[in-house]
Length: 530
Figure 1 (cartoon, helix red, strand yellow):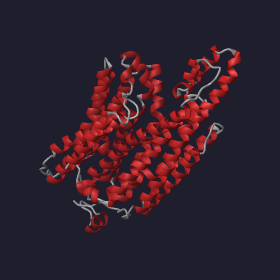
Figure 2: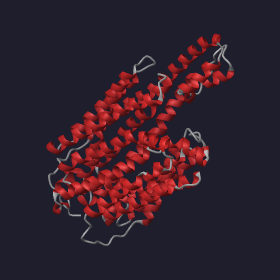
Figure 3: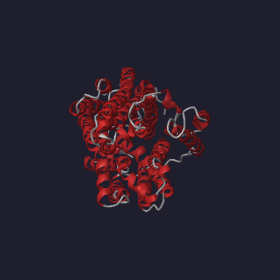
Figure 4: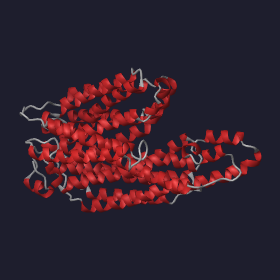
């Protein structure tokens, strides 16, 4: 695709199509959650409660690097169009699912399509706009993903309440069709056809290595103990296949994951930093609702309003940082500022307790979100700027893969840290005078996070036991607060690690034009290999 021959209007239409695609793919990560209880009620299968989400993320993460490389080889347009068609087919099938197993399989189909969209969205921006100009549009793309995380649960809840859960999936179809039409009409085809030898063996081995790893991280500490044969077997199998994968990729002429990227210091720092920033994001967003509802005793609606400042901070700073990077052609300062601000935010969160107000929590969340908005757009941009234009799709999809891997990894690590801390504090705890069923209730974090459940306990307890119950509830909430803030303390150390990584990030000034191949000096600076 020769972007230099595209007019500005054509570029803007391509941007509109890409942003719509990014929005619909990101939206589907969040819109389904509010509908899951009704889905389970209709299709049965409580034991598979988490699998519709897991199947989607698993298929998307495992295939994103594959489709990024294929787009470099075959062109962005056919891969993107195929991804959207697959995503829409999966959406229609999910809406028509008659049992949980069908829904899980069809969510996997959706995830494959989302992987193709994720692999290509930021890469198309990279191929359409010169590095200096693309900075503001990558920031805009990151903001679109953040916006989807805000409106997704709201849209999902509204659709579930007023229509049926099936429309949570059907709503993708009109938006996706508009996106597909825009891309088909505006994105040019590759004019020069080059014969490529697709690395099918590498694709198969990569998937065989990544799927067990993601399953182990998803199941560890929940479905199975970390030391169980199942988890150890999955991790060992993944490690073995990764060794095989590296061996295969070093031998083939056109590897699906070019090993030369891992000799490129900018790519390595960007990938690690993306994982670390995602870890802070996960540690904040996942555990905030538990703190708001379980510690402060607020409603789920209140927890949603407290997450909103985080996303608002992200939206504002991502847009501002992108604009400044476009003008100055500099990006390293935003990586540094991003982790510095995230570190301040996670430090503030690590100091909260049962007396912290919801207003203070909103400010702390806004600080974390502002740091995320400063840092996250940097890494796709810097990685793209460090490789030849012919490898933009591959490098962008790999950075996005590490973002997804970081999400899965830190969800597992931080979740285990929180639950272990809480179990240690609750071990041997007794509440003299309270019935055994009330003691069991107080030792269940999910139960004490429900105002309705607490109200039901208060309603059935004799008045003479209410003071003891309130005292015990306050004690347990204090333990829960300490366990959650220990996670946010870990987030502070993650931010420090990210700050160190940002200091090591080399900076190549962003060019104001697109070249078919990078100048030799830029390749040497980045350590990239064509």
